Image: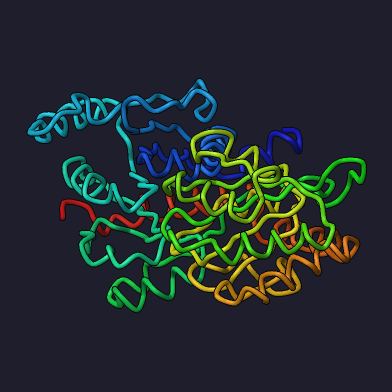
Length: 374
């Protein structure tokens, strides 16, 4: 018998990867498309069978690999059809024979719990925010194997709100692919680009940002600005922009149009207010090498002063101006900070690490059997 044959016979056979039913809400598809895409591709690379449950009418062609089976829920999107839609969903998903459910957004927590109970399998639930709406989310004390969070800030808030689930919280950093070069001030022949991206859950006044941009232009700085409208009334925004003579420099970009391409192409990325949700657009901008100017608070794990971002006080107009003036007066320093942020992401937010950690949780949950027949 050859050494190769002996080694082959002695090595234990690797366990089969679990069959997974992923649930993606409209919010997942709108705010975390790259996270979903990286997760699906990573699971496919590891030969994990996946079925994806997502809303009807959503454009998923650029996100979902061809090999992934997709189930649209609800099947009939009209009121009073919830019971029928759940039964259709159960029938479709049961044919796939999943061993675990992974719900990627807290807004679909009730669906995940219902499916897990009817399929007699465990589930994982992602919590992506520090929202007060947690109090109305129903967690199964038996079948909910783990609460997956993308940031320590969210973990701490969740444990404070639901201390009995503290031992089930697992932080898995969102993975991203970091560019080899930085986008910050690398093309002096082009006007610098600025993206201003107010969080979708904080519609605070942007007057201090506009005032700071106006003062920079008065100082002789030249740039173009893409403002993510984030659902605000465009009329009031244009009024502010016009009053400060910024019409030639500012363009409003609706969140649904070119959001991530805008965020990944800027020299400077401004996060003007704290967000209560994990900021995927901020992660995208940092990975592309944009220098970040931001305010701390909310879910701000990515914002580390003078390591990944320059910090300002959003309620202090002079603080905002001084922060942005420092960036434009010292482009070499801004570029070094952007590179430092990219290195931080390479060490802490790689895609392979994210996928491996998720698969590990799947295996642990399926093998534990503590939920069986509960």
